[in-house]
Structures are given as C-alpha cells and as structure tokens.
Length: 336
Image (cartoon, rainbow, N blue to C red; front, side, top):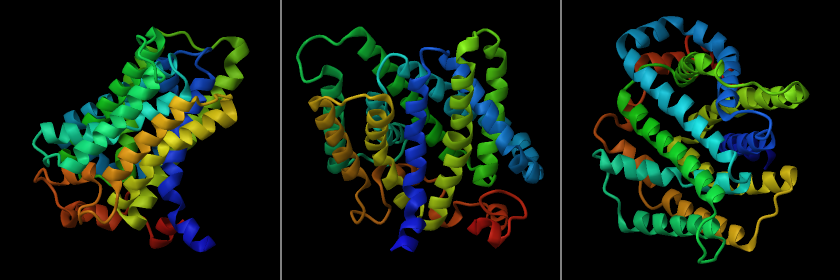
C-alpha cells in the first residue's frame, strides 16, 4: 500500500505545490508587488535549473537557433504574463477563490484548442463546462443577485486572464514541436522569463526592510518548491502514469487551495464557496473522468487531435535517449 502511494504521489504533489503558490503569494501580497514577486520567483528558479540547462547546452543552443521566437513567446505567455496576472488577482481576492478561478483553466485549454482547429467540444464537455462555470459564478456572487463587488470582480478577471494566457501557452507549446527534453525546456523558459522581467523589476519597489525576511522566504519557496520541484514532480508523474492520467490531479488544485487557505491563512469558506468548489470539481471530473475514451481527458484529447504529433512520436529520438532532465541521464538518475 505504501509503495503504491509513493508511486502515485507525484500526480498530486505538483498540484499541491501550485496551490501552495497561491497561498504564499496571498500571505505576502500586502508587502510586495506582483511584478517583483513573479520576477524574483523565476530568477530563483532559473538559478536552480541552471545545471540542467548547462548539461543539455548543445540541444538548448540548437533549439534557440531553430525556435528562438517560439521560445520567447512561450516564456512571455507562460512565465511572465500568466503568473504576473495571477499574482495581481491574489491582491484583490482571497486564496480560496484564486484556486477555484484558476481551476477552470483546463476548460479554457479545451476551448482555445477548439478555436484553433482542435477537437470538437462534445455534449459531455459542454455540460462539464457549464457546471464549472456555474460554480465560479456562485463563488463570485456569493449566491446573491446583488452586483459584484469591484475587488471580487477585479481579482477574478486577473486570475482568469492569467488562466487564458496559460491556455494559450499550452496550445502553442503542443504545436511547437520542440526537441528539448522537458526539464531542459522548463530551464530555458525560466531563464528567458527571468531575463525579460529583470528590467521591469527596477521600476517596481522591492519589499520594505521590515518585510525582507518573510518576502524572501516566500520567494525562495515559490522558486524552489513551487517552480523547479513542482515541474520535476509533474514530469515524474507523466513518466510513471502518462500525461492523460497525470492531468486528473489538476482537478485537486481548488480543493488543495481551499484546505491550505483555511489552514494557514484562516480563510473560512462560506457555504457558497463550498458548493462552488464542489461544482467546479464535478465539472473537472467529467472532463478528466477515465474510461470514457482512449485518448484520456478531453482538454488533452483536444490538443492531441490537432494533427501535429501523436503519442508515438511525441518525443524526439534525442529526448528518449537523454531522458526527462536532458543529456546523459542514467536510469538511476531517472529513478531518483
């Protein structure tokens, strides 16, 4: 039993760490700027991932020469834009609601993939999207017909805009046909994103002297656990159970976010929050539910049917030889 639990643990570890990112960002939102927070986070992640980048430097150079523009666009969407908007949303709404709003990102991926020539959205996916949207609306309104509060609406808009950029990143990444090993790709994007944000950091004030310690601790967690380690756990889960099955764990982000916010921030969910979270998770379950098609979750299926790559050629031969972390990786390294 313990061995089985350890085997499947990475499937839920990455969503747990990503949900924890929202909690940490919310904890320090009063004493730091979202742009500064995101830039510092990815600067630390870039430093941590630098050894991976160096080990796979030959493939990285080839990829930059062949797909430099695409890599810059991916970094702009997934590292700079998406995360900065989410942290802006954290400034305006509580961490519980941030997790719920971001939890609808798989539906945004499904819709964006369809709009750009992907699979058709079926009745089950449409129904699931409506259920999840109803949950989001319930949390936004608190179950009342009164107009939305400005802060609540602003926070939701920022977070869902960040989710939309992540959906665009996901669809573009799938179609890019990059030949880098996954962790090498993450390293490149982290470095490019950090470089893009460094000039902007000079325009934003850093934390005050009284808040330096908690802010640096938060940034260290977000850069190490919430970025580098979370992507490592995600990649390990994909290696063990496949991308489609790993995607099932993403539906736990709203639940993890609510539990962590309650535990560490003292955010007590209202009855409408609980019902809304239940609706979002139900909608996600309908999309992720295994056994309803050989291709797995609908949002991954939509991306896989764009005609660019199938499962057998999803990895370049160099990737299969080098493994998840890049060049010259041994079987023992992959097992750690």
